Image (cartoon, rainbow, N blue to C red; front, side, top):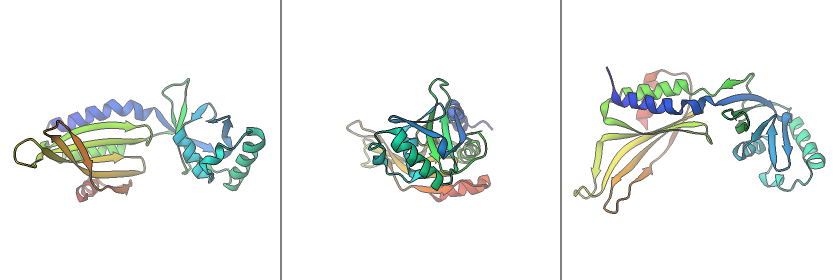
Length: 231
């Protein structure tokens, strides 16, 4: 059976898949990360500000200490060597953006080790989201689908078209209910929200409600649906 709302969701997801596929996961030894002035690098990948904050947290360094380093050779190199040694020069994961081969960047670091280069893989979670929406009928409308390159998460929002609240009974202040599913590689966030559809002053706004997180793991579609419904 053809379900237009599922087809629209798939279309929107397909539009952001190239962004997701441009992110690869690379195993990185702590000692291999280099500093040059105010910038940090892994090989020829520039470390972004968010990734640098991840790295400093992994190395247990205060962020303001970096600004006090005046000489990379006499101050940073010994500190970096000592901290890498304390951390057993362990392998961490770099999430690298490879869309521009001339300006490759590390977007984030993760303290979980991997053994080889691999792609950021959200396919299983995407399949669960599509399966859940397919089970909800025509009353669920896709609002937004985007890939957040800062958090490396797929952000989706849906509106329940059957749930419209006329606050004053005059069609001037209308609200609708909905929910968001934010999918990461290791965890998923679900949040209900109220969407202000129209107001006498012309304003529309979204009010997020409580958020719920659960760790991604091996489960069936029915278990995923139940977790969403419980929210």
